[in-house]
Length: 205
Image 1 (cartoon, rainbow, N blue to C red):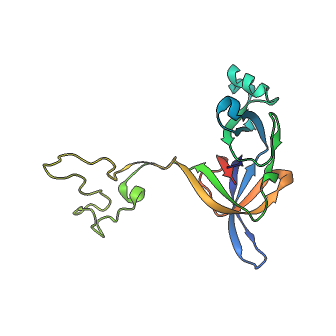
Image 2 (tube, one colour):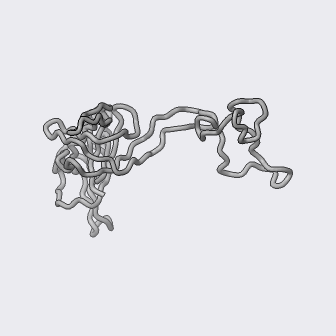
Image 3 (cartoon, rainbow, N blue to C red):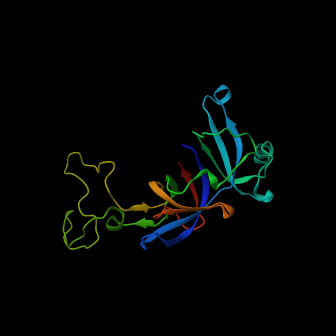
């Protein structure tokens, strides 16, 4: 799917024509530079590699400098490949938020907020001792029984236990574009998207 790389600015709300208050997220979408053009003849598939957000020369290695120099741009912090662009783009072209239109629906991919090491109640929604659904006797947030008897004498893989939560790639589908502010490269979509403020997101048509 075609799309752009963006940065989550934060959440706000706007009123529609009926006076209904709609929660929405503001995204800085682009401008993105075409840093590589994949072709069937060379790569076996067709795609565009887009770069977003300038990187300082101090934090750029020589290989990256050479790669982005071919596109006539400075090194970028975030690079993503997209497929399915209707128009043809060449190396060094800039794609702006004009790619999207008000009223259409987009999918947004982001990295969810990391929550660290969490127990089973927060991580998996276990009921605790009040509901007594997992074998615990008098411990409110304990996982309860996890294993079998003398056979197979082990804990099965995939057992829901405590562990690291968050920090996963999450895709939210069918978010309606409420507003496109072309002069400021802003995209306003209905609802919430994964990630913290200033985190990178991928917007797909």
